[in-house]
Image 1: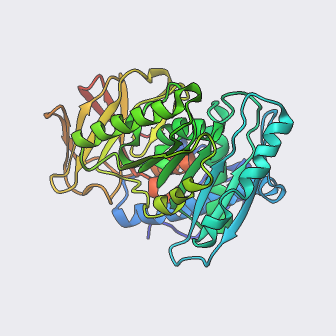
Image 2: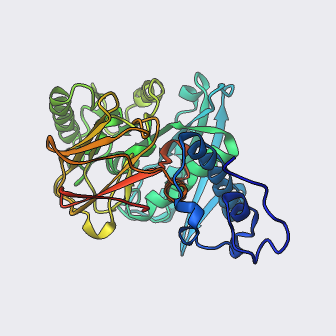
Length: 411
């Protein structure tokens, strides 16, 4: 057995010799896991699965101890920022867990009172659509009153917290999380859908403007756009149509990716008379694949260190060019098709590849690594700490330097 009973005597002061010892300690008394020999010991697939379950449970327990009061008060806080939120549950809970719809209100660079009114409106905007569905409909109130209120850097952290809390508190399935938004909320969806694409099962933009957003990272996230055909302020209608053309082109080049639906509603201006509500049922047809066989990752101004099964340090994140990497389970190989980064991490688990056999890693078809990397507990811990998502837990990491040098990593 990998995990033995923890010694109770002087538990918080004695050095942990296994995972159960470490987990049994008060969090303030725990050693840094990377300093403990058992954390980097090679694991079997079964041991990795056991460690994942224990570490996830511990992460969720500590997450709740930190944020339960925020959930109960419907008010998230981060430094001097606050995000109130409202939610309502519809329908019967499916066997595989509930869906979560995160719905972003309009408004933007206006008075707090106007944005408060938009928040109130968003709470029940799609009640009729939800009555024929199931899921948790959650509307947050943006922490600021700026034109870019839904795509400032702090939004990603707030939404990440909402998702994790909803998974724990409401049994939301992390593979059935959707984002939508109207007007300024649509602006946010244009930005947040690609930069947090590994969180979404699908996304829908209503009556917004993309500004500098890129659709490249939406390769595995079905995306719908709804726009009034007469909504010409800031060229919103023309830009939405152009995004449709761009997505058509991306899908023609990559037929297994970039699922999308673009609809310009005839005779409608900025208010589409709820014709856009069909987006909710459209999105719900899709579930997230957390380990897609091909990932396209273009960093935004708000950089992320992990995206699906890829990672990179903040200080080496190039934003102009996308990273494109694929894996082939049958061939047991990973192919880096395009990578402008000096440092790239490739995370692996047993659902992706056979980790008991040699893995081949290629850069543009040329082999740069072949070997059997070792699963370890520390890598599982780091991935769960980063995302709080059992579907994004990885016992193996390889680090690629300058597309030529490969080393095992515990990042």
